[in-house]
Length: 414
Ligand code: LLP
Image 1: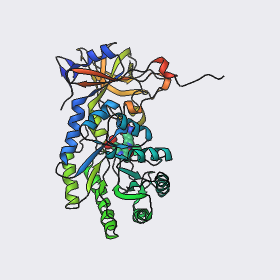
Image 2: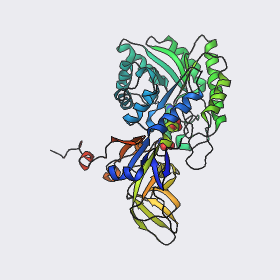
Image 3: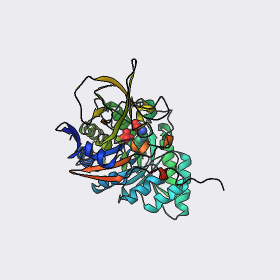
Image 4: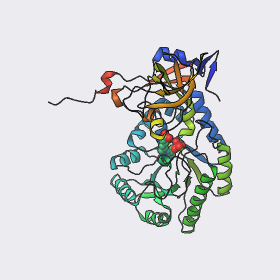
């Protein structure tokens, strides 16, 4: 599946030229491919065909309602981390019975909303949270389905900001504490133990790290079983990486083979929480060159997208491919592709060999995950619009913010 490819010298999203999208909707603009979203979901789900499983899209990666809608129609579940994400799932027609709720800081009102919606499971991350959840469920006269997010203390060998399964991370309960917590949960009147959960990190390209984490989980599952605590599901989290540059990443079929081999004939339903894998390659950030500033050693291409639109390069030093939408002939230079924001960290890409002229359109690849979702209004810049292409049609799925939107919720002093 190559959703973004050149046709007659112009980069297209499916059957629509990105030049046409820029002309119609303006830039900066996020462009997603419906076919690419569907293909990635199928690739993941098909790898586990024949094994009882549920893919719960980690919607923090991209929570636009149209994206959720595409996945909901395919039968996908959702991994949420806030009441806001729950509201989005419901608004997009997602099935709350396929929702798992992760996060270290769930508030009582978020718990109430999730209980009222009858979600599949709370991934509980501390003993303190368990106590509050039990009380909230009791107050509502209901029972909360729970699993503990266990920290397997496995190194996912990824960027430190997105490694989450190490002992020193704030996430999950310690491996050694898990058995006692399960025994305690089994005595509480308003929670029902359903599963176990882990998530070791993000942009993982190392299959053995998964195998290690799964083995640790199974060690616990078997121990709990011996204690008479039977689980319905095991949630192995998300994290499979994508190729931003030259990474050799994990094929879901290989992952499935390893996991199946480890579970053998255990009866548990498998849950997964992929985010980036499902959406990352399905989106580009379309931006226009405003000015060229060639210089002594450093040549700057100033574009109309900035770190407020895509913060990954500034925050993680992440590398995103940048392609000219209509590559031109001429002498290439090594450009620093930067935005208009007043910070030196405001770059989208460094040292890219391109032939550029003012007004040219560029596509920043791999922008479907943690792109728009992490965008902000820094420097009072309206957030970009989002467009979803479906074959020959382009749908505006979120208009560009207006200047009035910027301070619509602010007031002057009386
Ligand atoms: N499940 C849980 C509990 C998570 O915390 C995350 C991501 C996922 C699933 C999905 O992980 P994925 O499959 O997308 O790797 N902003 C960073 C990534 C942060 C990931 C946070 N948690 C980035 O742009 O690279």
